[in-house]
Image 1 (cartoon, rainbow, N blue to C red):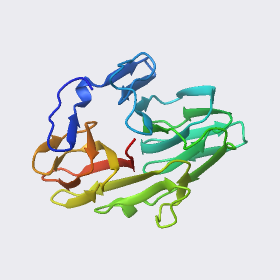
Image 2: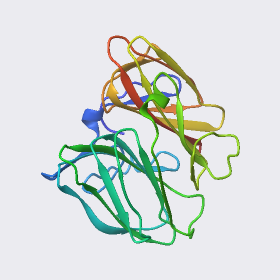
Image 3: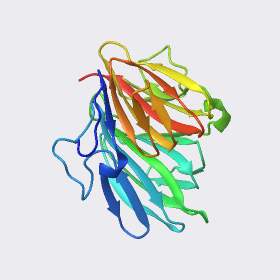
Image 4: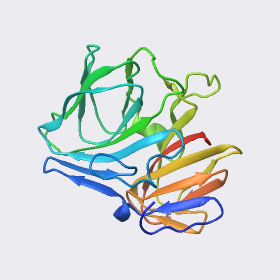
Length: 246
């Protein structure tokens, strides 16, 4: 990946200033991986994780109806209101800390709009399914924001994982978490043998293992290593996708 990078044993720091960017008036996107007008052949995906777009959508705007197929799509609302509509008849509006997911499967049409009065910020996450051709599916979950304060909140997991408490089930061997660490708190996350994780610092700042300082919108690739996240004077809002190594 481009830009400032600091490699430790199995950590790779990614500076948001060096990420792809798409600015279109009503939309301001930070691309963690190649997407739309941003293309880097060295930065297509991370394991099964194909897309993380950090999108800012102005009030009264959004993504008009368009198609998807054979992709697991998760939307994590950071601020504002996200209104979803699709060809399966679903119409829902979500707010801060709430999550929607869509298995595009054999094909689905959907739209995503900001019908609120404030700017919408959300993470758009695409994950390759374990196989193509599934029946399309949609769901959402209105997590209480406090459920992630100073602890890891399980958001999504593989349909085959019977041990996870995550309420959202998707069709790939991944686990999705979020946490909101108050200033002065610490959180540990273990990435075991044969596993890897992609971490996004959504808001605030945090120290990782005493060797990496993350600011808002920075990211970290973690491979087979435990990480300890520590906050100092500022809270930190964190999103993490853990998965099998390719």
